[in-house]
Length: 436
Image: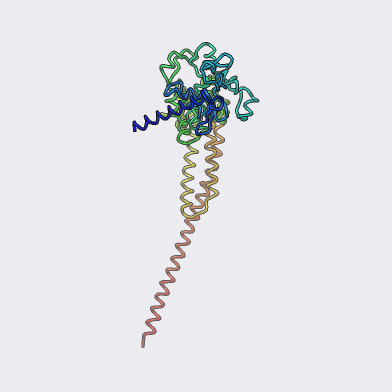
């Protein structure tokens, strides 16, 4: 196997050497050699590809898979220079507009030359936004960059430099399934983030990825194959990345959980909670909600602020009691309907009614975010009324079933009596026929 690899390496080097030689002696046509995929290589790629297994060769190899290469862009569109010159000095001469490798703010400027040009982008990607650079300028990354911190993320930190793929490409670092890992390349690196501070002065944590991977959002994204489930950029932004901030958390969560956010706006907690939704649900390690979070039980979150005997905890217990009652009555009625259905009775109307009762239970669970038992009670009452109607219909169906069984038993008994009587009569007739 090692010999095959060696031969392959020699062949590869021979191909690149031949390409360079052709470029040197063949003029303009040889300087734009095409590979087996049809990609036309500039002199930049030919030279850099022939540098063996070095860092200088990597960009040329990666660029073959780049979305910009697919659109016909070449090295000079970002770096400048003469793509046909085989001589290094001529290729990078002052008259060629050679810009070299951009760094820091230069990276953003280079990308923005095209991505902020509406006319140009309409030719290549008409649906793509052109405000990425201006949005990036508002981000915490851009502000740190302007202040002289060259370690912050720029365009290539997330998208790559020479192997850039479409966002919809599963191999792209900004594909929904890959975003968290991309952000974590910096934000989960303790050594890299050392010294970075939150607004209050505390050390910026590096456990966000670990917590997020334990959340319901991550499970929905990876296990449930729901690409719309939130990941880092859904809450923090992508080009305009910034912490949500105290006043924005409810709005950020409300982009998906709109009804809950609307109820929270009506609650007394709106004026009390500094971190809004995060107070009860957390931020990165968000867990599935449950009824146990409400009230004064061992798993309730209300007890983190409220003490036994205060009005807030009493209100929470009252709301929990209403929900538990409705939930229990629905379970009892559903068991009754299932029992009747198994006996062959028609209960489709009752099943639909139970669905409506379930909707009221969902609404009740939503309404608790208003933290007002007075607004919850009518919803619970509606659900209980629906369940009561289902229970009445189910009991009536059981009564009818019992009546039918009694009628059937009576009919069977009458038939049995007739059969016995006929048997006795037949025997009597048979004895009479045999008598002399």
